[in-house]
Length: 321
Image (cartoon, rainbow, N blue to C red; front, side, top):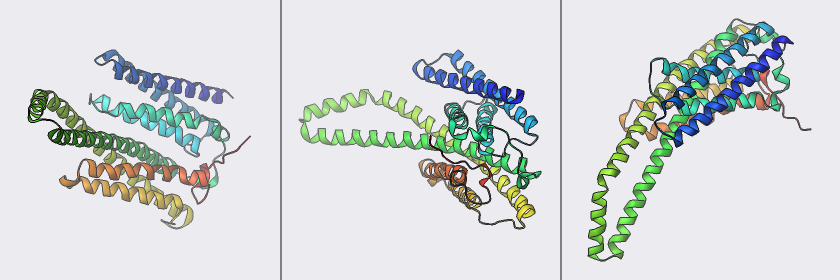
């Protein structure tokens, strides 16, 4: 009873803090240059990290097994992973664009975990015999960490595509405007329009330069985070294969979870391969990563929603009142 109460307190504190962090980010979008806002948001994510860490430790002590045995615990661990990804670059004072992704991701996962859909899973239960293995911590933790890193990297790629697509639309619109103007107005009016364009060249080039820098930074951080997530995913799949051989007598059984994990690994292997070709970097590789974003959610929730296969320990059913 005491452990359950303490878990609820920690989850509510972390959820409230990360909600405040998102509010601070929205304020920072309206008011630039306020350092205190960024410092407060970083402190909020650190507070969230310690609260979720306390929750996981409390859950570990009360259930007497590593808290990754069901969907509720894995969602809380996923939220903890997002806070880790937010904090680590800050240790080396690296400026990145992960902050606007990690905080909403943390509140989304916590919100779903604490919702009424997972009420039954919120109570710690006895570990099923199939999960009583030393590989539980190694395999599941690596998989969830990989999901967090790959999701963050994929969202950065999505942002890159949005900025690039918007830029192409603006260029296309301006070219059409100039083309129409050259046929619709007199020669003097066209000359005036060209002079106005020349006067605005410096301002437009300044904006394009910063947009180019933003695209390059998004591409850089997306590649780094996805590379880290790919390493975690590879370790998770290999450790899972060893565990499967011990539990079921075969390294690979083409279980739905295993199949989608392999598809996820293949998608991001293709992404990393495209990064080796300079002609395919940027928007082309970002398209592959964006596809991987959807594949991850299918891999993570597919088995849990359907409750099929050998990995359906943390499945849940939707009930209606």
